[in-house]
Length: 246
Image 1 (cartoon, rainbow, N blue to C red):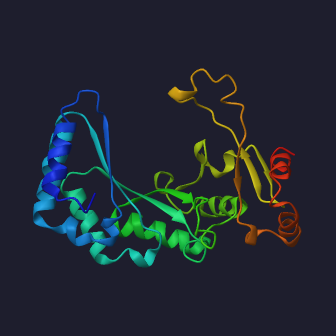
Image 2: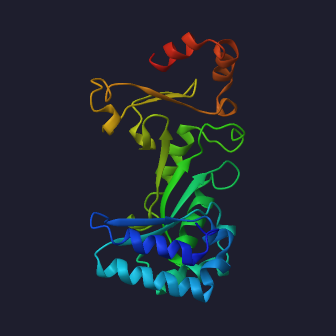
Image 3: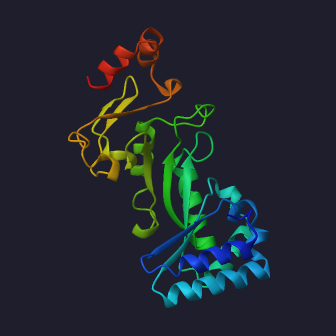
């Protein structure tokens, strides 16, 4: 979004706000952290104010979602940019971060980030996602067990509305709180999840809510027995299928 000239984005948002059924608009941008100068530019701040005013008049909730993963990234300039958006009329700025090994995978680092977001910039710590199972990301990923430990350890330090939920974006399921797992083999790092809702393409699928969908911990986070099991069975899809439902 930040790479788009504001006048183009504003024109699109203004047309969007003319649709009666629109009730919420979320503007997602990593550039609030990466390019705060864009959000401090007078033409951007004035444009945000115009859009926020129209949204308020029409009863549409406007929010900005950003992406900060470490307290060190929350510079005074980022805080100024966030305050500028709030002053322009954006009622909520929320952070959707990602849990990353060596960056924010300790209680102290996660709380430092959350307090910096909430207290220094007025940004609500909203979600922290477990890193997806994508190529090249294994060194960043944490186990589900560690994510559960982190969720437990940060509870009670922050106001309820500013306590982030740690979620796993499970393939074919979507966002799930880390404690919503159905089954979890911690030795092999295999967790099983189910949906509790249907999408339009699943309306006629009878077992849509009964199917188990699998998420895997990074192998390097497992104990020796689990790593050995993967060495022996990692190339056997039937073994994986059996293990997932064992």
